[in-house]
Length: 121
Image 1 (cartoon, one colour):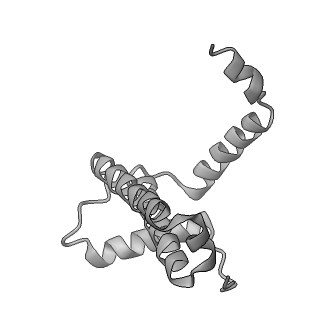
Image 2 (cartoon, rainbow, N blue to C red):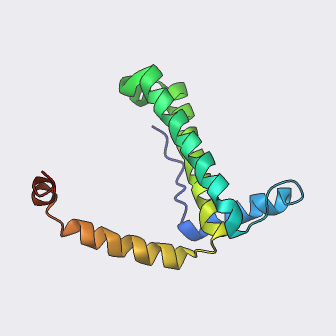
């Protein structure tokens, strides 16, 4: 597995998303909230493409075959690209997202999942 020594921050990913949009703003939908729904759907489509690779190639191929792995990671990258497009369309900053993410993480760290699922029965 290759380590490119690249570790993108959310703020960088948001900027890349905006840069790509600016390059194509004459033909792509506006960076406005009412268009975010479509980008969530595109994101789900990319999740489906990731799932298809798992189904067709299997976990072992993803781990052991560099070409399959690259294709799989590329599809996951597409998921994140659309996710960043959604954040940008709703004007959600890296700081806002990170703060809420960490708040949810802390909540999940303190959850008793076993008890929670027992209560569902």
